[in-house]
Image (cartoon, rainbow over all chains, first blue to last red; front, side, top):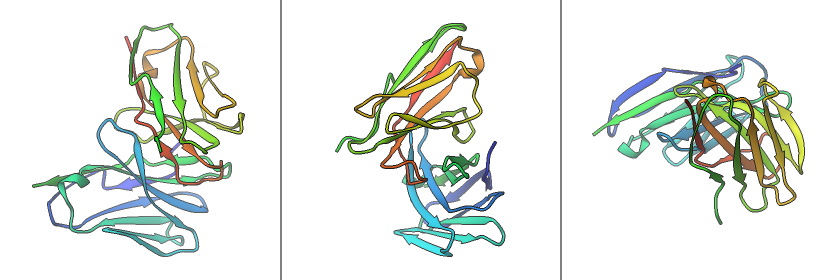
Length: 110
Length: 113
């Protein structure tokens, strides 16, 4: 079963614009992780936010976490063509296994 | 340092056959996890091994099995292949088993004819 659900399923924006993706989850979490996957490749870890954190930054990435709404958002600022990929959120269950959403497919148009 | 390596990269099998997929973790990483990813979906957890012991098993049939060797490399075996087993199989490693960021290989693309 999937713990997280990303929204939207697909997003197409112009290069230079900001992209926002959302993730909702169902149960209490210890942390929430965001990953990127380029077509046909493995996933790359982007950022981990702990349950006691509300916001975290890494370069052009900003992640927020609202535990009361069981949701998180990933903002990519000043998007580039290289940001074209699928983005997934994942949360550990009670056995520390990562449970994944279905992902948001992001397309950056030049 | 080398990243997570998986072999083979692509594999074509027929229904009923058996397959073995291999994974070498990042040096120093003691935990290996296996995931199945069907096209258009997120990864589904299959197994996690830590220090050569199974730490977790996802909701997959007994046709799926795995093991971890003393050098922390791992194999995933799937018996009696079904068409529905066609997917990208991903291996990820981390230092421990406690929900740390995972480092993924590029996967093995398994096609069942």
